[in-house]
Length: 315
Image (tube, rainbow, N blue to C red; front, side):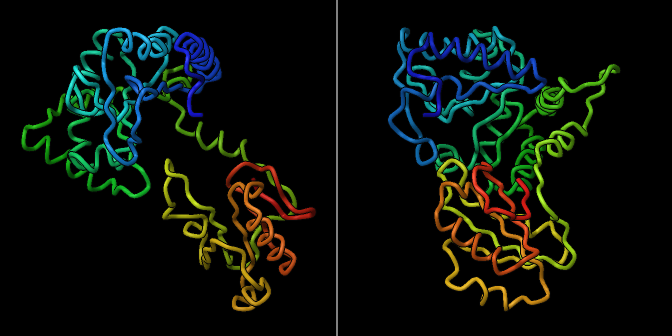
């Protein structure tokens, strides 16, 4: 369900079209997970999978990546997968996979980004911080750090690796240089990257109906669905960036919305839902809360498929 299919030639055609379409619109595409994750039985979120390598299997695995590179893909993400006969290390920290195979044999000169380093295939074997050092050393340019990995710890590990001589400063500068060019599709006539392009895109993507201005401190009620294994539980939310906000996090509908709101009489209600169309309890809770607070605001941070009539709404 996370690929274009199971036939290499069909996948390759889709990859080529998808890369071309994205990048013609100014969005850098990323092909993943190199050198291939489809022929594994294990889940790299939980353990280190192994792919049995033979020439025919490798040709099939690499075909979509060759096609992506021919289409000019700007980035490739590595797999936390050990390829038998190629290297005993996961691809993310393997010079044989990144430098020799991807850069050398396939000729890719764009940005190599790792899969999330807190996944157990890395954190449960060499450790996330050590994995970051080894990934950069193997040829990766950007590190994917998930929600429960402290970036300052990874930063400290990289600095110490340079100081000790395990990691060359030249390699780090090369990685940073490649990563900084990834957004150059948004460069102006002088070649300068417009750093505001992300903010502009975010503003265009927001849809607002009704009066969503806050006239007093907010009571942010976050209705949290069960997290997927790929994303994990979130440890931050909207309430943390709103001044003087009070945050209540719920994983089931409150029995009595009015009694909940009565505890915060001076606050303006903000209800945050995620994919409410998929979760009956979110819809029940949101409707009950908004009916009890006439100036409440509903914010959908997932797919905007559902909202109650007349709600002040942000998606």
